[in-house]
Amino acid sequence: MKVLAIHYSQSGQLTQLMNNITKQMEDEQISVEHIVYTPQKKYPFPWSKEVFFDVMPDCVLNRGCEITAYELKDTKYDLILLGYQPWFLSPSIPTMGLLKNSKFKAVLKDTPVVTVIGGRNMWINSQKEVQIKIEEVGGKIIGNIPFYDKSQNLLSAISIMHWMFTGNKTKKWGIVPLPGVSEEDIKESSIFGVIIADYLKGNIKELQGAILNTHKIDVKWSIVFIEARAKKLFTFWAKLIERKGKTPQKRKQWLYFYRFYLIFALFIVSPIVLTIYAIIFRPFLLNKEKEEKIKILSV
Ligand SMILES: Cc1cc2nc3c(=O)[nH]c(=O)nc-3n(C[C@H](O)[C@H](O)[C@H](O)COP(=O)(O)O)c2cc1C
Image 1 (tube, rainbow, N blue to C red):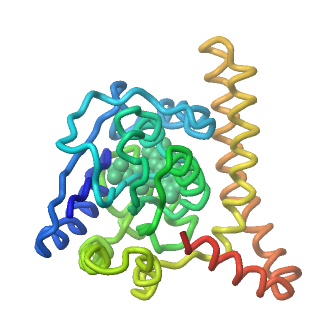
Image 2: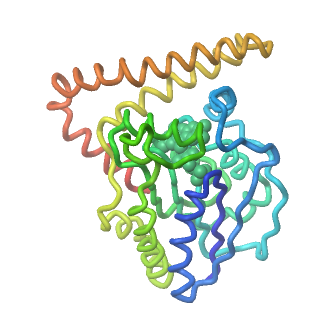
């Protein structure tokens, strides 16, 4: 059994998750080839606010970037473990770069893929894009293991900005919950390695059921609600910024507007809309919500 485990990580969080999962697989005698790829253009970590928001249009419009050359030992694998992180509700620019990379597209063909996501808490839209790209070249996602911050959405938005802008995975003001995937979830990620190894030896098609049976993965209705609307609005903003921001000065100005819009939408509009929806509409839509959740969690 040959597995290709490939990812990019800025802080090392996704590397920890990938390593914990693959270590268990290697303990089960599965041969894993590890590739940590890098984009040709370096993205800073920690980020400056200007650069952070400046990547939004490229993320949302799925532009991708060139990937630094890498060598693969084989041309065919029994499974690809693709680790990635969402940026602005889309696959990160390096992830999209990899998915457009001809060497990677060649190994994806007719190969089962398990995606490992290391995000904040909004991965549904990006997973749809990743799935489209994989299927376009004849690959198939047979398992998805999203890791995310389980704290309240607004607190997690505050904490991730603190982490991204300082590089420190610490408590903002000493009180906001820690950012990103929790230490406990990172530690426990190894159980997924055991599950994948078992299924590689048996029936790989039923992998996702076993992943969900751990009861470690869930989607909150409020996140599904926000993500569905936010992606459309981000696409509108991305196109507007590209259209209006023809000079660096103008682009900077429009990115400023977007930044204020984002803070306003996240901290003022979304709590009001979610409350109204929860009181008036949600009680009548619980069955639809359940169906949608099953669809999101299946592959
Ligand atoms: C520019 C940028 C945008 C991000 N947008 C999202 C997002 O839309 N949804 C999400 O769940 N996480 C988002 N994150 C968090 C990342 O998915 C990821 O968890 C974090 O950057 C740590 O990943 P690393 O392993 O590359 O360090 C964003 C991070 C960055 C840098």
